[in-house]
Length: 406
Image (cartoon, rainbow, N blue to C red; front, top):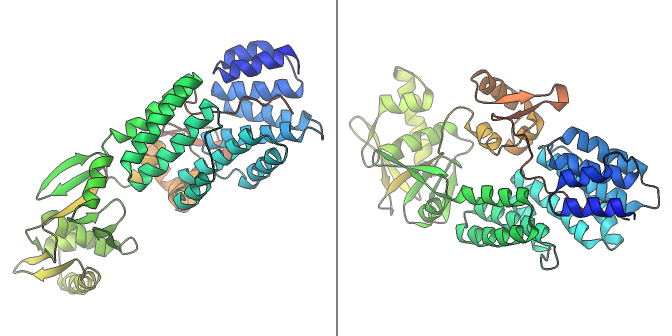
């Protein structure tokens, strides 16, 4: 390995991509191409970075399997940052096995971390957690330890274990400071901000107030009857009934929860559940049927009492009934929530993350773009969507630096 390649690798390890480029920008040998690819990725030119890394993988000879595998890992990182969730996970698994077989355990662990981060992003928490438990972060360098702790925090936040999340973020912050990489420090700060940003709204007795993630955790652990409009379930303690596939029943439950302890008129319930301006006899008949279905589903929690004007929710044990709603509610709030991470998303990646069809997601993106809430760049398969303004640098691109050796 020559001195310029070594110096460029050290510059990348320090978080100095411009310093790395100064040393290898005019070289086209395989190690230089790989280092240039990582540097360009850290500067935000992901398309150029991907081309350079693929060129490096081709340029490495058949005996340099480890170097080629490291290029695959770097390309997988670019795919993750650019939210290309359809990038072949099998290629990353093969690269990880190659690195493990040749004794490059740190980069093998990094490849595993990329896979875990992808699983976290698409909501497959159980699988991500199982893989994370197999990792021992003790021998990791500071940057890799910080990434590991960020994943721990991400899973804990999704599980509503805020104490565990804060502890993991504190460890991530210490590791990021030791690594001395500005982008990594920014990533940790961004993750920590989630804990201090309203995550939901509480609607109770006619009043609404924002809740932090810790407040949501405390609410779900309380003895209140919670009508959860974030997950479309009705819960009391550890017991819950899902209404995710019964939107009419959930609309009725939410209307009754928002009005509790008062009742809701039949006209208001018809308007809320069936979106009808005027309640006729057919609407009233359907309302009776749906209220009967809802009564059966909620029988362990509450009764639905008929009143002179409508219906009222009467909890069996709980002394309080509350509605937990998203912090912002609009027709395409879920799409906006994913785009709010500041990264650019393809419509196919959004569809995968949301569990929806690509056509449904594309319609939502077109409507949001028409309203000026999001913007796109690129064409065809390269088209990406994000909330404005476009960033000049990728903030959470953390590629493995040692790509130059075999």
